[in-house]
Length: 431
Ligand SMILES: *Cc1c(COP(=O)(O)O)cnc(C)c1O
Image (tube, rainbow, N blue to C red; front, side, top):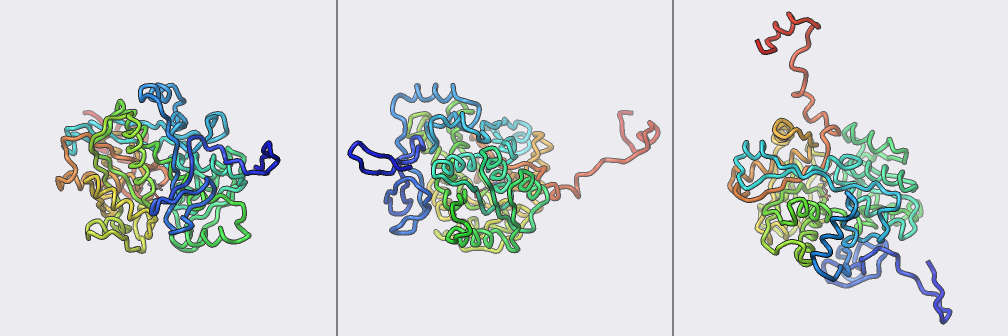
């Protein structure tokens, strides 16, 4: 927006994104004005949002947050969004349940407190609503009228819903062979949905080309040219977990990895809470979870490498099937720096873990949730995750979107005529 100054010179007003001050390069630290940029002009490193964070007492800030709405906008002072964000049409995700999972803890022998952060409770039933809600505000600030993304499924649905609510056009891209639940959830909100014949990495490459072409002009790709803003949405998982634990850091957190953005931004959120004095400064460990059929970060972690070698995904955990994860090296760094680890599990272990969570806690997670709990179980049994410490497992999506994973082994116990004799004959009932 052009603004006339008193001297009559036209200047460009910086967009109102609240406490966001600039974009800064994660590699060389160079700063850039807020805009739809994602790579450093000097070294091509990824950009992230830098803030003027609130000053004043932690007590005051805590009170201000607690008095805020029951969604991610309670943390608006720590996010790249305008102060009046809660009054704008958005999907308002967040403040999902942190479930104390005592039955699961008993089964796994965890004594230090085991929690499931259940993000299936978001508006489109995955954690992606958090990142999209922030990207919508950036899109508005930069004047984009079409919202787009490359997606492994959940993101497409979240973008479709958020665009519908915000009155924006949407056109989203997915691999053509996703689960029916993901496809329907992406299409039902009325935007354009394009299946690409290829895997996620092909979809992503296509979108990068589209951004540089007149066909994609004026489009906000939430996870490409709006990626620095999008990523910040994942910080709210860290904020909520700590607030829900009574403004305490957990000792151990287990997080699934697709591109690795969520894991790196949860770490960023925890660091901010420490810096602001909202939680006590103490060590915590971050663990990353992948499926064996798409485990480039886990493989690099185990081999002691700093770089991630791309893989061709083949797993039922399609929401995590990114063979060339953009944030892989940062994930490795965080896991090593905090004393955590990155591990993977087989598809069979994913299915077992989905059913374990369902039968112990009444939570039906999607395959990504199965990956995360499967890895948690594996690392507990290996003595890598400490049973005596407070542990949070993030369930990032809803099992209703990935029914095929468990449908073969989750069927009616019996199908009978409506008679007591038939019920008895099937060996059911008390007597
Ligand atoms: C996208 C996604 C993730 C992880 O995403 P990152 O790219 O690593 O941020 C985890 N779980 C589910 C269900 C997802 O859809």
